[in-house]
Image (tube, rainbow, N blue to C red; front, side):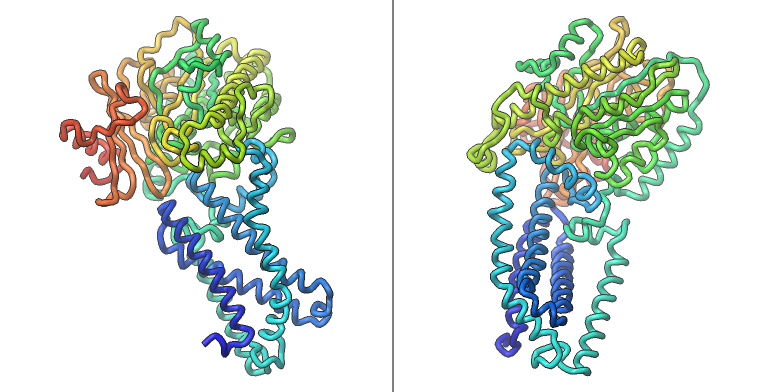
Amino acid sequence: MLKHLGPWRGFLILVGIILLLHFIFISVFVWSFDYSPVIVPLHLLVVFALISAITLFLALLASFRRFREWRRARIVVGLVPGVGAVLLAALAGLDYVSNYAWGCNVTGKVLIGYILPDWSSISTSLPIHTRWVYVAMLVFLGPVIVLYLALSGRFLRGLQEMFLPGRPFSLFRNRSRGTASGVALGATAVAFGVFLALTVPAPSNLWRGEPIVGLSRPYAILQNEMRNAEVSEQDRRARAAYPRGRAFEKTNVVLIMADSLRPDHMQVCGYERPTTPFLTDLAETGWLRKVAFMTSTCSETACGVLSTVASRSYVNLSDYNFKLHDLLHDQGYRVYFLLSGDHTLFYDQYKHVLGEGVDLFFDGVCSERYPVSDDRLVLEGLERVPDYDGTPACFFFFLMASHIVGVKLAPYGQYQPSKLGLSGMAAVWLGERNNQTLTNLYDNGVLQVDAFIEQIFEALRHKGYLDDCLAMVTADHGQGLGERGYYSHTVYLYQEDIGIPLLIYDEPEVRYANLEFATQKDVAPTIADRLGLPVPDCWEGVSLLSDAPHAYTFHTTRRNDVWRAVIWRTQGKLYKYLRWRKESPPARREALYELVSDPGERRNLLRKVDPALVRHLRAQMAAAFNVPAD
């Protein structure tokens, strides 16, 4: 059949090959990250539309005689689709990595505003030698350009035969065929544009996960619109009703959060390597307390940060929460956010949800001196904070060195090697656990975090804020270091993913009744209680000054392949019930661990304990997350 189509035969064969390759990619992508299968035909539709647009653009060029006679015309005709193919392949690879690492596609805003400008620092921060990144790009993408250039002569001749007037197989062979072809192409373009306009904008989820259209779709933190509105109204009422103008201890408040920081890699928490000399020395003075078992509510930054300052679980985060710094602002505090990393572009509405009513919001996007994920910019932002003049202040610091893309500075590269060569990369890909090089890289990041905490303390002391200060050091979530062949976060809820530190800097004589068991939701209530302020009714956490800690904590991921967890503290035991995959059997999977005897979560007790215990934890999960109990 194709042999009768003349030059269209080669075009259709090439398009078929391209669509087949994209079909294979998007099918694997959907299966790997549990996206809706509907994005398979949608992705192919967009790819076909791009191919058509590039072809028509080149046909327009080829319609000009001067272009056809230009000696570099063949190069242009080969390079344009070749570069397009390379960009789509690069986007596919980038989205695969981004979904593996943080559970979402790369948006255009993040790509243009963060990744491309900061690519040099990101690439040098990765645990592989930068040359291997470029070698991989050359090996996989270079041949594509070469192939398109090799076919460029055929492309140019084919375009002339397919589109120039007077050619037997041309869409515009004569006036009547040209009119019909023009109307058909225009109507198709309009229909496709209307379809995109109706289905792409939020809150539609039809295109969720599609890589190309996804460039224009924001990565939303919050997805349950009805619950969002309900919680926002509750928190607005709570803030309006909260008492103001009362007398209390107006101590300066400092909250320091490090990205991906694990307590079991901190010397101050018992790690054998001296990764936190400053915090360890501080603990020995009696001014620093440690919570023995502290967890995050999730395993990624946005919900980890918001849960901490809003004392809310992920299901109760909203466009508006009554947060710790809102409470302190209403009591006359100045509020300063000094954050390494991108907290402006990465998540849609993240900066707005975090709070715009602050005296200074300075993150990596604002820095004039350093890359986005360089912790030195926190000190740059701190220079803009005035010296203490008697007005209390609330500081929120965020450090990135413990994150894989955080800039690692040479003075803190104590543990070597911290870069993978080709053999080391292959070992990781083949599933080697706890690769020492990656552990070295992580521990160097922890060492740098400790050094910058010391510099923050010194800068605050110099400005006069540390003399009367309550400070807490914690993390947004943990980090997999190969325990299950995984070197990231956002995917799981094992203890390496949600186990975080909580260190409290306070006067030695102050008694904290609970230093055994806490979550991020307890940070804000503890600070309010310590200052002598009532804990808002909408907050879910419990003050650590109280001797009535939680019996249960609840945890979730935000990915398509949702994980949920319940931890139950009872009679000297810590039971952890995990559930993941889809809620309907048989796809659902679950596990039960006892963390006191099995902190590494190696022994699944689901079939070995009293079934009543399992039913009890399933019921707790059902109530917390509104999912089936059985």
